[in-house]
Structure formats: structure tokens, C-alpha cells
Amino acid sequence: MTKPRTIIVDDQDEAIGHKDRSTILPEEVYRVAALWVTNSGGDILLAQRQLTKRNDPGKWGPAVAGTVDEGETYDSNILKEAEEEIGLIEIRPNRSKKRRYAGEHNYFCQWYTLVVDKPANEFAIRVEEVAQVKWFSRDELTKELHDNPDDYLKGLSWAFEEL
Image (cartoon, rainbow, N blue to C red; front, side, top):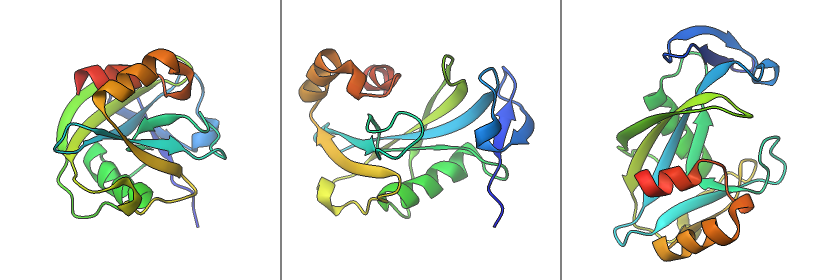
């Protein structure tokens, strides 16, 4: 089975090529889709990355996120990742803000939002990707991001404030 290739883009988020993820150079820009899940009470669902992940193992981040591969769009990718990572099917996430991240990893992230009302233990997590999911109250997450910033993915504070 052929490994999917990641879409490489220019500074305007226009596709300019495709590469195996392991060969992407630090200066090359790619696409990511991320899903910010809340419940009707305003709590935020976060996912802890599996400890075996190459990038940011064990860190908490958005409930769902994935690199957009050849043949995918931001929209198709977020639906695929939501099903694969936490078992959400037949969802209709709302397209939100797109943000460019530059640093150790360079990418455009198209954010989506979704309201889901169910206990954390009812999400069907994919253990190769996600160690656990947990609902955080806004107050709890504010305190966590202040007291333990290294436990969370860079950019999560932005999403918390903006989405």
C-alpha cells in the first residue's frame, strides 16, 4: 500500500507539490485541518497525543487534527480524521478561521468547530493516535495553559481565545 503524500503549498496556501511526510524540509509549508469540539455547556474536548507520536508525544491538543494529504481538501480531511481519531461520523463541522503557523513546523491550519454532547468515555479513540480525550472547563483550561504550558501544543492558547 502506498503511503499518502502531503500537499506542499506556497505562502498563499496554493498547492505546489507533494512529498512523503518524512521528507518535508523545515522551510516547506503544508496543510493541517483541526477540529475544536465544545459541548453545550462550553467545555472543550482535548485529545492527548499518543506517546509514540514522532511530533509532540503526550501533549494535549485539539480533539482532532490531521495533515492534509494528496487528493484531500481541508473539508474532506477533517471528516476523515474525526472518524479515525475519535469515532465521530456524519458530522457537519463549521468552518472557522485559517491560521498560518511558522516555527519548527510550517503550515496553514484550517480550524473547524463542532458542538458535541457526550461523555469523554463514549468517544471511540484510535489508540495509535490518541492516548485519551478529556473535557476541560474554560476555567480549568485557562489555569492549565498558564501553569503547565509545556503539556499543550503550541497554538492551543490561540485557539482557546479565538474559537
